[in-house]
Amino acid sequence: MTIRTREAYEHVLQAVGICISARIPVLLWGNPGEGKTAVIESASEQGWHVESLIVSHYEPSDFAGLPVVTGQGSVELAPPGWAKRLAEVDGPSIAFFDEFSTASPALQAAALRPLTHYQVGSLTLPETVSFVAAANPADVAAAGWELAAPTANRFVHVDWSLPLEVYGECLVTGAWPTLPVFGDVPGLERRRAAELVKVAGFLRARESQLSAIPRSADARGRAFPTPRTWDYAARLLALAAAVAAPNEVRRLLAAGCVGESTAHEYLAWVSALDLPDPEVLLADPDGADFSRLRADRVYVVLQSVLGAVVREPTEQRWTDAVRLCAKAARVVGVDPAIPVVRALVRDGVRPPGAPVPPEISVFMAALSLAGLFPEPV
Image (cartoon, rainbow, N blue to C red; front, side, top):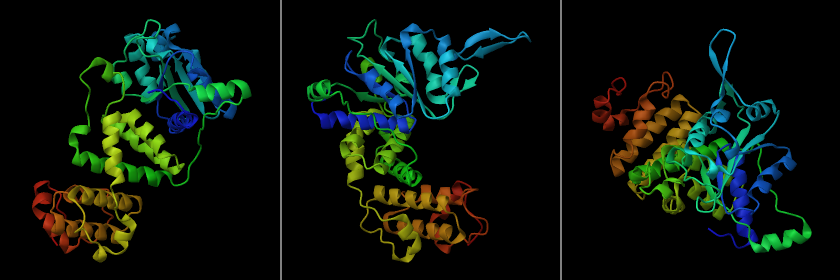
C-alpha cells in the first residue's frame, strides 16, 4: 500500500504507536530509505529507550543465548549485551530489529522466543519491552528472505511509505510527525473484555476464520488469522477505541493482525451490531427481549453477560445470568446459550451458595451429558 497523504501517514504512525504501547510485536514493511528506522528511534525523545539491532549482523545465539560452561560443568545460555541493556532499563523500551527480512531462517527461528516469551537465553526481559521490526520486501532487500509462517504470525504487519506531502513539508520545516505512544489508559480492561466477546461471536458465526494459513509462501509471510492474531486484534482494537483512534487506524490494526479480507469481514460484522448493555440486562432480566436478535448476536450478548459476571461475581448476578440464558434459549433455541451456561456452572465461576434458578432445566439434557448439571432444582 502506498501512503499518499499526511493524514494517511499519521494514521499509520498511530497504528504503530498503539502496537508499541500494547506490547504487541509490529513489523513495518517498506522500501529502503523511507524513514522507518528514524521514526522508531524517535521514541527516545519521549522517554523510551530504543535498542536497535541490524539483524543480519547477528548470529542465532545472539537471540537464543550464548552457550557458556559454568563452574559446575553445566552449560548456561548467557544473554547477549543488547538483552542485558534492555533488562536494566527502568522504564519503557523498544527492541528494534532492523532489516528483518535479511534474517536467515535460522535467525528467524531464534527470534521466536524473545518475541512471544520475552526470554533471551536465561534472561527474562521485563514486560515494559516492546518489539518492533522493519523490513524491505524480499524483492528489494539485500539478500532478502521470505518470512516463515511461524515468524510472520508473531507480528502485526503494517505497510510503510513516506508521502511527498510529508517529506516536502518536513524537509523544509524540520518538524517531523512524532510517533504517538500511550501510557495507562482508563477503562482499557473493560474495553478489551468487550472486544474479546465480539471476536468470539464473530468466530462462532465464521468458524473457518479461526485459523486460516495461506497456501502461497509470500502470503504466509504476512498477516493471516490464527488464535494468536485474533487475540492481538482484540487487544489492539480495544486500545484504539480507548484512545479514540479513527476508523482507518482500526482497519490498519485489524488488517495487520488477521489480513485484509478477514479484517474487512470482521469490522463490517461488528459495525452491524446493536446490542444491549450486559449490566442493563443483569439489572432487569425480566425485561430482556431477545426476539429481535439473530442467533449469532444472542451469542455475543450472552458472552458479554458472562464476562460481566466474571468481573463482578455475586450470587444474584450469577442467578440472573442463568435466567437470561434460559430466556434466550426459549426464544432462539439453546445453541447460542448453552456455551455460556456451561461456563457459568463450571467450578470457579459460580459463587458459593448461588441459587440455581428453575429455568436452568431447559438445558438439562446438554448439561447432564457434559456432567455439569448442578444440584436438582
